[in-house]
Image 1 (cartoon, rainbow, N blue to C red):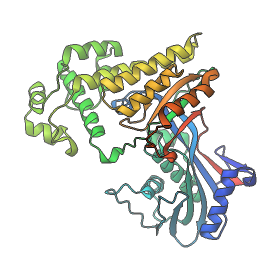
Image 2 (image 1 turned 90 degrees about the vertical axis):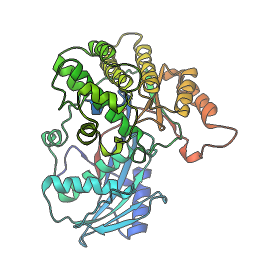
Image 3 (image 1 turned 180 degrees about the horizontal axis):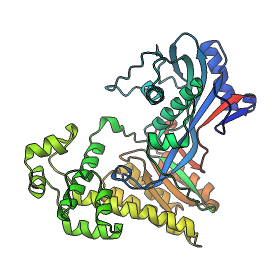
Image 4 (image 1 turned 60 degrees about the horizontal axis):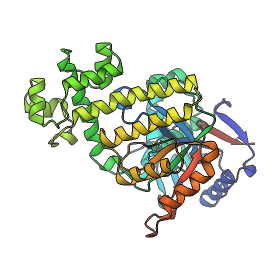
Length: 425
């Protein structure tokens, strides 16, 4: 293992009940003691939904809930994975022959992705074996990035076992991101509420269709403004090429696109291409049979949501007296756009948002991909106890008992720490 870095922390495991329990379960499972522990947080997107893949900034916050892995490197070249949740079966494979079955959404595949990503980044052929016990308290399929946390955790596990580091520059090169700190209001807390409707993005066409609708909208907008549209893939590219504001892009969208859905034939006429060219050169395999595309609505959501992110950041920087109210209004507008323009909400999320607003949230919106998952609300700190009690009673304590207790997830959270390696002191 590498020398200790700022991302490593020595702890007294006995003083941390969750680490201690994980250590005991590890010993029971593998008959040995972990060499180290790794954690990676979940995250909640406060505002900025479905615009990242269109080229725009979002505003996520790391939460306190996380994935925690106890690790022991071994000399057998066997990778053994176990989970504290009995719903996720044990998995074992050769560390030098990592195969990921992309046809099945198996929990251990997320770990293998993190491991394989590090292996390929450093061009390594041989990896040491390890025993790993995984524990997580991020609600799955809820839009809080439980799978991403597991991938990140597995990557950090692999780096630590190999004694390697990823420099910041390497990380930026690995995934070209730019991050800016935003100071959130001190007089309010963010509350996450799980609708208890699970949305499996891998098993639905909703998400894939939205991505393609945004791509087609970008191409039609580019063509309308006499730009070279062939290579345009994202709505942000159109704005950048035109050199105009988001507000002006909304006006262009009004002029260029109509609210009625487009069929493939009309898209072909607008772009001057054949149906065969549309299917083979633009549409993805999983959208080739789609009959209608709502281009106007998707573009309107993306440009308005991108503007709301910038307004949210500006309000946080300027910190006016009515800051929480203004931020809440932007979150409410965001949900309305997700509901009406992007159509990624569901009745349960809409009901939960209404309940949160009724009992004191200044703003509430769906977060994550939508079609289920969680809401995030901004609540004045002094109203938090009553808010939690009332929302729990109104949404979770249903007379029909339809919500399983383990899915009832309602909690206030503050910005959490980043990924860490724990060494036992």
